[in-house]
Image 1 (cartoon, rainbow, N blue to C red):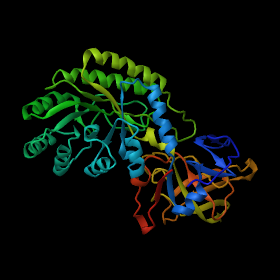
Image 2: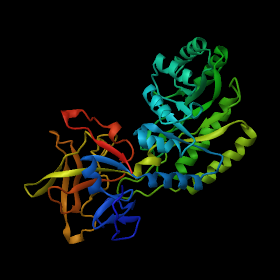
Image 3: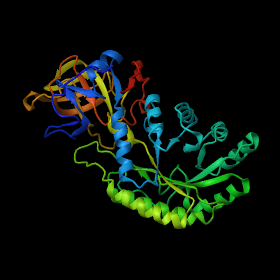
Image 4: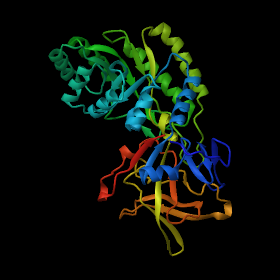
Length: 425
């Protein structure tokens, strides 16, 4: 039940100081307290305890609507649930997108339990176990084959279950997504089948009688350069078109991957969707002539959910050590590994962090402070010497851009502290 509030400033709002690493948009506040889904974080903390993740369902809806408006209607939109598999959020996403991409048998079960239709699920990932492949065939989902090793296992499952094994080949392209935070294709990679080896694998797909449906290409992730994404999409399409000549059946789905990034750090700008939409429209027009049975699909995770989530921890102690202020909280890297800088950052940089119970503090009410957790390691750092509102014990620290790769990507059992709560509001 929502507590009636009167925002002291417009909703949604942006909160930023000149020295902040990144303005935060989409959230409102009332009487200096951050609101998520219209509810004060103090109320959520009382109900669920701290630390917790809160995801704003209205922001999830808005992000998908923004994408639908920018992209041509013929492009399918899939959610890569590894970004955030929280059950309530996953159920929300199932109702918003066209398909769910999973990366394990456990994720497959979660997707089915959340209401995703088997025909709308694809299963990627290296090292699939034989029982996972059998599970996928039994469920009737599309398997993105990562290695020739999977083919006889799928054929055996197909024969045993008397059900067709739906397959697409994940291709390791001969190019990379320039400007990506994480490169998933090009060069030597554990993901997918090298492009030059694909024709032979396609012949084996036909020999084994597997149901070929298309290709999956994923060049990289967390890219904020529209030109790079457009180039990767064009190159992926051209590669799939060449490989289609060797396929045992027409291409029915062409998964162009994702790579759409979100801004986390100082100087980063939001991704411009307009040129991507124009590029995809051109590819759709080509596909209508060159691969008339194929649907083009985008596979997005972080871009759909990251900016809709916050991580909230309570200040337990305010310490001064040789002139430096440390705010010690009940949360840390065991809940939010990415914000600590230990999930892919080469050089650690701060996520956007605010004191969520002092959102309207003036500039002279701020100080240079570091936010740390309760773990006995110097890696447990959520904010390193940031300008923050002057906080006391009991205040709530908020880490923004936390809807992706949060709770499920963190070592929650480390040192035996309580696990984090998650709530969709």
